[in-house]
Image (cartoon, rainbow, N blue to C red):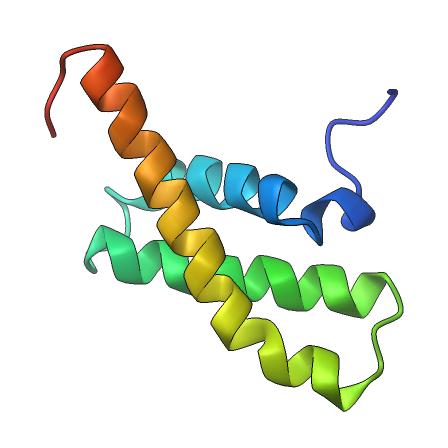
Length: 91
């Protein structure tokens, strides 16, 4: 594997959740909105970009992005909460 991220990887649940979690943690102090909403917005942007750059032209793909973003966002938020619990830190 010679690349950190690919558009194909970002189009998967695991890849998008990882990227969403990383970007959310990077931006959460700079953008003053609730972190859950921020992670949802980031997930929508990443999924839309991945769909665009992997040749997704079907309207059905674009219509499902908001729902998939909910799954990605909650996965990213849950993973971060699990890391905090494992390290005995609270936010």
